[in-house]
Image (tube, rainbow, N blue to C red; front, side, top):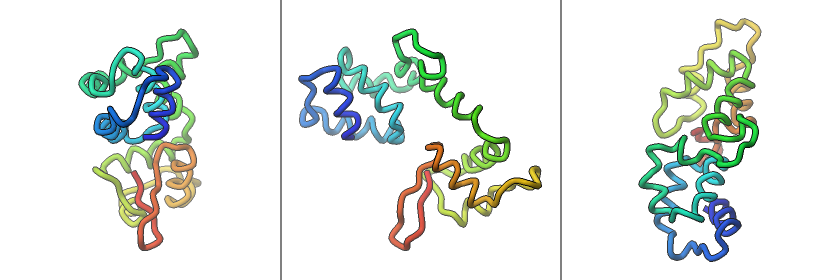
Length: 152
């Protein structure tokens, strides 16, 4: 939420979280806390309050499109995702796609149960591939009480 507020106040100094807290929290959840998505959404508060951004979020790739004529890969959320996907090794793409079966996240044991990299004999261990996806900000890891991680 703080990232959204920081970026929103940069484009609209009068923006206040107190008046928008519930909507900003919903928006952060809807965008899965992805920093790029939050920054692009916050840039819209100059013309749309968070509540109206939420109402339009179904058209997220249009709503979060950059309005300046910058580099294509940075112009839209879709472009950023496509660019990140293209940078992955084939075994990383496969692992990320295989982890997409999980709704709401997964732990390491679940990931190891579904990730099959046998097509690439030289692929690293699935744990290393998952860690690489975390390092590349395509998967998030949150600590669990038992010392393990929860991936989303």
